[in-house]
Image (cartoon, rainbow over all chains, first blue to last red):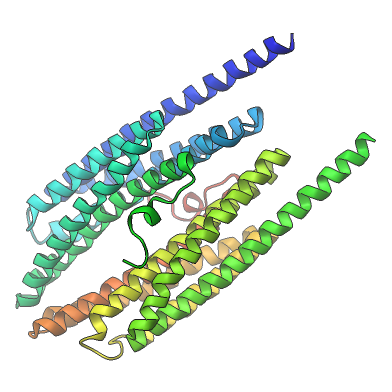
Length: 233
Length: 233
């Protein structure tokens, strides 16, 4: 009887985890959707697209709270221990990071408002594209790594952040150089606005690396930052 | 007997919470310490002060993990429910935010390296001072609000973020204007570097508002952002 109860409990727990994973999978799709919309807002500068990004943030906030509540519910009902508990808490953190990515997208889309009135298209479109594509790949990979609890994959994605950082520094350097030389103040401001947008994208990738660090720590108890970037280097 | 056990358990739980609160209190002091050091690094540009900020980040990372582990331990040993569970999880989040503030400080101190070689002192020192002092007040208040579970105080601190945002926008505006007019490329770059440093400080305040949002949500189940900044405004 007791064994049956245990099995029942395990089954319910497994099902709750499965539901949580489904929610996270949907949340990833939402995040990819809003990044795509944001790029569209930047390219077209259309007010209605910018608004869509702003409005969608409410949906993302709501989903984040739902995932968080589902995690609380699992902890309360099943009292998971050790790795199971870390799995659930990491889901909460992952969800927080996706929610913040939604916030970044709103900031980026709103920047498009300043720029679009003055300029069509991006000065550094190629760098933006590369940064965004790399970040999207990282996002998809990191959620997969979470599902599989794959520390190797998490580590590989964590390292890919360097690609985004390099693109950011390269882009920033180019834009600042152009801005410093630019004598037309309006055009200089647009170039500087672009550096801020690049910075937001770089932060989006940072959120993905946060998730990677959490997955790595959850499984190994080790800090990936210390492993690969010793403070005395 | 059962009642005694319950009382024992409650007493142990209370003591574990008290220990957690002490750890958080120390972590706040560490955070204030590193912010102070960072300001010092910016003002003096001294390499040894910049290094101290960098090195202290390891201490902050370690404390963050200790607090997180203490939270896991409390959840595992006492199975706290409802508000108690949220209290513990909010401690984890608070700790994450303080840890990220430490990261921001490293970034700021490292910026000082670029600037100090070219310039002594800050172009907009008054705005920096005001931003930092406001943020320090917010930090001290928000940890107090967490300890007292005071939603009113959390709300008041949340609103103070507008002061920091206004200072940031004002400072950024001034710096960008100067940068756009500046014909000396090195000087233009320094002005732009300062906008990035302002931005980091603004993000530090954002981390404090995150904590305020969590405290508010924990007690009321309501999202303070939706309450005060409706999406259609």
